[in-house]
Length: 237
Image (cartoon, rainbow, N blue to C red; front, top):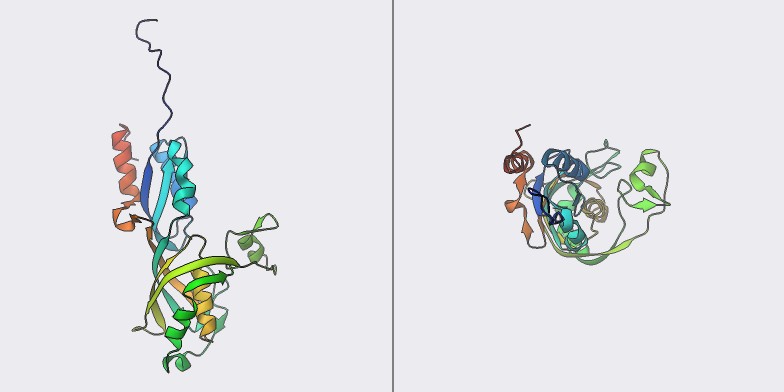
């Protein structure tokens, strides 16, 4: 063996699991791409997409840990947010402009709000939003929606274990939802408004938990990058 050289083969990157509090307007891919470039990760992926207009817990895996992504994606998730009754948008959030306005005074009488909550709790056949990343005929639905194409969307089984609301700021409704993999919160909002004959859109959304991982333990993106670059002996960007 030549002096100064080792015959030990380089070890594969064991990887790590990173919890990031995703910033508003960033896509999940934006976060993964930023971390890959800034922190010199050779391999990185995220475990469950968040819409650009949502914030909260994003789990990312690097190196060999990317093999565990499916495990994290399958875990139960918790969200908090605000929906607004009486108006609709094509995307069911503020990515697109308003396309309908409806009365809401009739909702305040009786038990209609709680009846709608009960109807949307338990196992549901849920139809994904037209503005979503679901593939139909090999293309993302949102691309078809932006071209104005009408597409038949199949329902999928989801489980809503908990659905709680607070209507003190009516027609804004604060909510908390605990749900299974594959649940679209925008679909919950769309269907909630439909049950109330009023329409609804999602004003804000935050993912607070995935399985045992909590957003309270997540890094702010720039803070994580500064910490990791310091560990690697790299200058701050």
